[in-house]
Image (cartoon, rainbow, N blue to C red; front, side, top):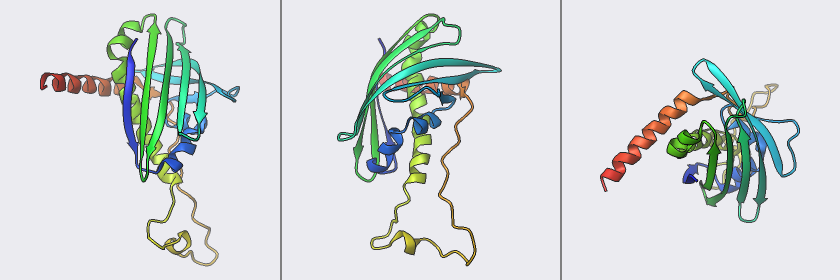
Amino acid sequence: MPSLSETTVIPAPPDVVWPLLRDPDVVASCIPGAELSPDSGGDTWRGSIRVKFGPTVATFRGEAVLNFDDSSKTCTVEGRGIDQRGASRALASGRFSLTGTNETTLSVEGEFNVTGPLETFANAGGVHVAQALLAEFSKNLSARAAAADDRPTGGAETAESAAPASPAGAPAAQPKAGPAPARELNAISLLWKALKSMITGLFARKGQ
């Protein structure tokens, strides 16, 4: 069963990042092609992800059970999914945690199992695809965190003193918006990133 152990850095404090990861709508918006189902809620969240293979777009559906621990900023995940035609099934379990002070280290550990036509590919390159997807997720989450983290950067400076004065009658400045959810996950682009990750790892092992 393939396993994954990765870390990524979000340039914002854990107290800013954790509420974002606590919100499945935000998490879904950071995953290209992901969409939550209307019947999601509680500890169980259902949804789908649209994957583009060249001119073809396929939809994979699944659900995940999330258990959050606010005191330690950790979450365990148990998930399962099935492709559009029911030919391949996936089971996954994992844990993510946040550490840091001025910036956040997001650690992800887990394992997954795929059966069906995608089993061979998942066993051979699934970890590298997951790494590439995590990098994409991290980039989008960093943008959301930057929009949420509007603290003043000066020592005694306050938000009021840092903000430029608006002309009389002018509308107040609106907070920065986060990235819009992508319509679908581009599998070709993701596979290319995964291939580069595999090649990099191969040369790294040869150099040891």
